[in-house]
Image (tube, rainbow, N blue to C red; front, top):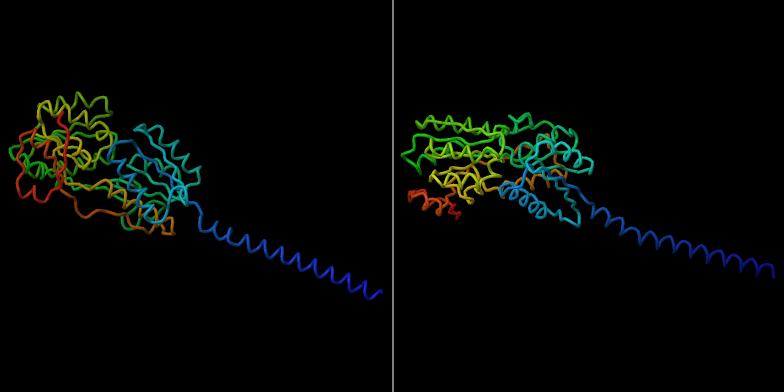
Length: 341
């Protein structure tokens, strides 16, 4: 009887042990896919600081997000985008930069030079990707375009200012004076104006400069310069871009052509540019963000620069101004519309 009892007891123990083993094995099997899913669905955070809303910078941000999605980073799935917009208020940029750092962003994008500079002053650790910064070296953001050397790299939107001035002279062959309209607070604008001035003087054009401290001076400034210049040149300038309808409206009153640096400004009523599509700039920026999220080092990732620009003409504006576009130029240009003011 004792042996039978012992056997029964051992049987119970064996059954219990088998049950515990099966239960633990089941838990491990059930948890393993969850752990694998957690790895696969790791969420990356990308911060975006945009200096101001206007069509050019908005197109860049759209390009960034589309490129990230094409690279496999989808919002709501494995990507979280923290977006801040300074609305051209320099005082807000430092606070917004800190907020993006505190969100533990894996990469932060600075759209336009003031936004990028604010980010650079806030963090030396989190990778920063420049979106639409004309002169990254001159803005003290990188040491060298080929070897940035720190936590910052990105995409330069440097436009061929010399070619843009020559385009203006080609479209307005009788022009003798060009007026440079730009913001006195934007370093990138000063850099381009210097380049455009050199090109204009080589063509025999007299250059008149009109730096403005804020948008409140734009109306009066354009009214004054429209009486004194044959065409207006606008560099890659966020302050002016934000007020482009006002600039076009005042210039059109005197039928003064505007040569711009950005395709979106041509669409808004500028006459022409040789420039880089802003959405394309955003796409290249987004590709670089994806590379860094996947392990690329910004210190050794060269700043992307475009080799050539595209001729963009506003046929409606040319008709309004009575300007005949040379056939050779027309054949190789992208034609956009515009609204006459």
